[in-house]
Amino acid sequence: MAEELIIPQETDKKARYEALLPQIEALTMGEEDLIANLSNIAAALRYGMGYFWVGFYLVKAHDMLVLGPFQGPIACTRIPKGRGVCGTAFAEKKVILVEDVEAFPGHIACSSDSKSEIVLPALKDGEVALILDVDSDKLGDFDAVDEAYLSKVMKLIEKML
Ligand code: SME
Image (cartoon, rainbow, N blue to C red; front, side, top):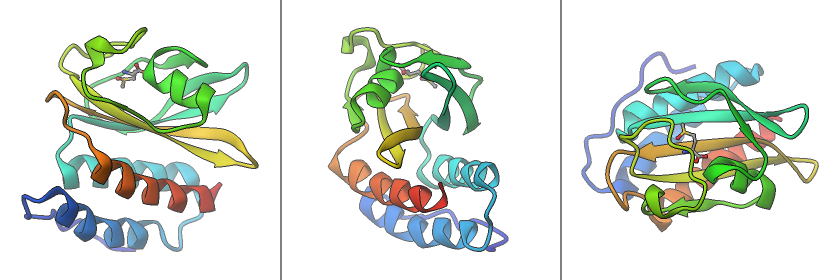
């Protein structure tokens, strides 16, 4: 595996993802442990893209999302299916992009510094196995470019499930 992350210096978001994605593939290639891989993916995205909080919630018993590997400030440990942005992405099995978290009904504020977020599910056998949550301390920080590249990361993760 790659020993060190080369932080993309480009200001253009697409170019940063382009530089980061092969590194994420190299980081996880040859390692079969899911938690180890999710841990490095969270760190690579947090430091590579500079977002405020990057982490995973894993689906556990009783339709509960439980905090997994993450980078950033401490966060809520459990989110029920259907609650907040993460719980909604889980319930609806779809990507949710929120430009202003205050405007999202039922948003769970783990940190008052979080202003916008994107949440993507990873599916195994047609069911959500985990979700990726990326939070920004800026309003409207996520767009179709994030969705496209983070979806590629989720496809990579789905191969590990
Ligand atoms: N804001 C999320 C909760 C998770 S944290 O922000 C890390 C939500 O509404 O689901």
